[in-house]
Image 1 (cartoon, helix red, strand yellow):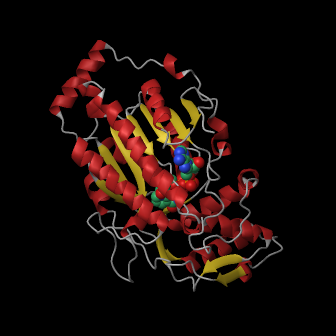
Image 2 (cartoon, protein in one colour):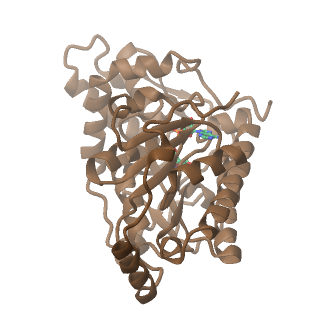
Length: 396
Ligand SMILES: NC(=O)c1ccc[n+]([C@@H]2O[C@H](COP(=O)([O-])OP(=O)(O)OC[C@H]3O[C@@H](n4cnc5c(N)ncnc54)[C@H](O)[C@@H]3O)[C@@H](O)[C@H]2O)c1
């Protein structure tokens, strides 16, 4: 059963009134600026999927680096954990609602109560291997849920006065996987045709198309970001980097799909969060922006770098050298060979660049996991304990 679990302070009590002078100022700005940039940062941000990896990091950043009020709508699937937000649940600028982005009444009520000037949609089923085992949840959340959010957002946006309409943004967080697989050369640009190959990437591609349609057909001021692989604090331990760290600590095999040669571009999660905040403020409605770290690595290189870092940080480990735990396993069905992102549009038009290199970001990540084993235990206390996923070929 899905319900609004907890709101504090009571959302109806939050004032969304603008003073007469501020309102006039915004109206004046709206009439003299194009929609290509918002005059001020968003002040009321509805985040969906904020108990997950990237959404959780984004909320932490918003509360420390902006003045924004934040509402978080999250279904708390296996991938969503209140523990990720434990330190901020009492923050008066933060409130949480448990529920499904595919629930029209719930989303409508949240929009009417909270009155956001931005929605950032992180909520998704996000693991390729799980999409192979059971695609339906990916259709339900990534496609139907995104449709519902767009539909309710459009009604809400249409109800706003012109100044607030001009400020409003709907930012959809997507992935480079929608572009399909590359050979050894080239990189995805925003003009690369979509060619998704897994149920996960196909469902994300469908949602991206819906977002574009809601802009072109109805004028909803949308933004889409397509980002490469993220890593960093609070990533659920089924994904490569945290899985390798935790398995290495336990002396368990470090699984490497196929020959380990598949290439991904890697971006530190907090750089991704900065990019999203930057695009929200400066992006042009209707546009898509590729986000990447300019850090292509084979999976084998990633695992080797992690093993070297763990050897250095844990000199008394019983499992030295950790590289002895590397184990090649059956490849993922339909495994995309290479992804690479050309993020020059975001850099040249909007002035965003990542701050972390892969080496500095990975060192911070390993140290974070070593310092937060309690968080790992909490989130793993659910059903997932590191077993291989993605070989059931669509059984649902
Ligand atoms: N992780 C990456 O490397 C990466 C890279 C690029 C883009 N993305 C995209 O970024 C977004 C966030 O990814 P992530 O890695 O943080 O995912 P995640 O799986 O860690 O978190 C997803 C969150 O969404 C919530 N959720 C799932 N279904 C929901 C529903 N129906 N209603 C409300 N909440 C729901 C979950 O409870 C969870 O908190 C996704 O859209 C993903 O496609 C991820």
